[in-house]
Length: 164
Image 1 (cartoon, rainbow, N blue to C red):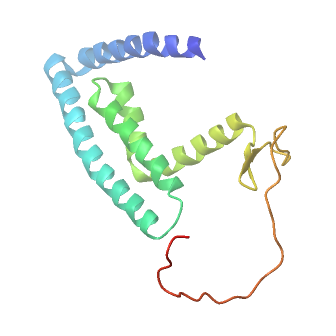
Image 2 (image 1 turned 180 degrees about the vertical axis):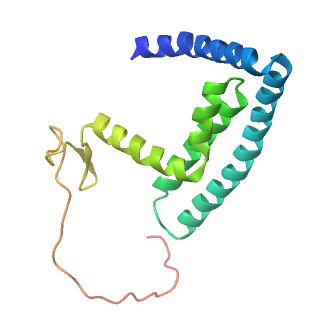
Image 3 (image 1 turned 135 degrees about the vertical axis):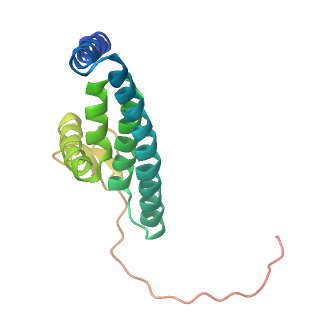
């Protein structure tokens, strides 16, 4: 994993520089600079618009009492995409657009969810305790208390009581 990070930190700027030079040779220096500025401005606009939509969807999910898993992952992808669009370069702009636009964001969300699930190895929660993919609890973990008896009762409030 650290090797991958180093390769990304070195490789991405080299790729971006190569692409900027190639586009500059193809369309000229000033149009290339203008194109980089336009993509940054577009990134800021899309980040604001999609970020607002995602924030609204997150609030609605919380108010409805749903777990906002989709909204949280959408928010993370929108932030990542916005950061990539604000970064000068054509490769980062392409990836940023994929993260921000709703149709491609949905595909990326499914792919990333699958990667995270595979990375976690199927770990889950059983009875409020962490468990592995076969439902086994860690050593020393207690079984959850389950009382199958139902007791019908009535609460009577007799007012404030004085301390003993």
